[in-house]
Structure formats: C-alpha cells, structure tokens
Amino acid sequence: MDLTTENKVYIDSLDYESLLSRWRFAPCGDPWFQGETGVYWGKRVAELRDSGTVDHVGISKLIG
Image 1 (tube, rainbow, N blue to C red):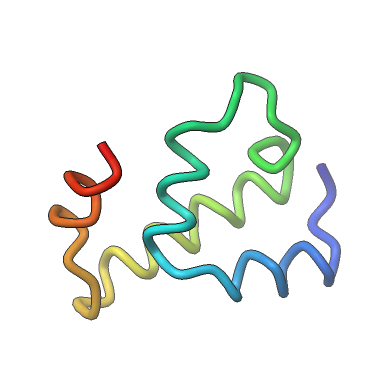
Image 2: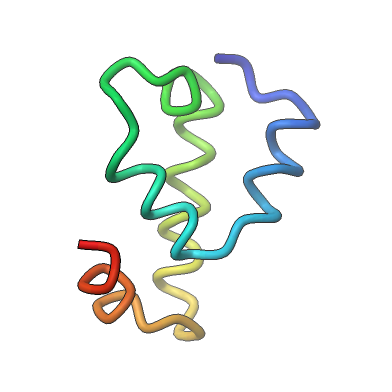
C-alpha cells in the first residue's frame, strides 16, 4: 500500500503497544503491512522501541 499522508498520521498517532499488537496479530496479507505503508509501520515500531522511552520487553509480554 502506498504511504499516504493520512496513513502516516494514523501510524504516528499510535503508541508502541498498539503498533506492536496490530503488527503481531494482523492477518496475513493485511494491507497495512504491505508496500511503503508496511515499511513505515516497521520503522515506527523500531523508532519507538529504540527510543528508550518504552518498556518494549514488558509490552511484548503484556500483549502475548
């Protein structure tokens, strides 16, 4: 999926738990994880994980 301004704004509005949960439990082929939008989603997850402001291990355990 092309990365539109609306998609970018939506992805940027989500917290780490929401991003990771959707990433983990989305069905195969979910358009949010395809093309430019999927690449951006992954970059945003990594950015938040590496920021030092979230407990990425704790959040991962929390969502299962």
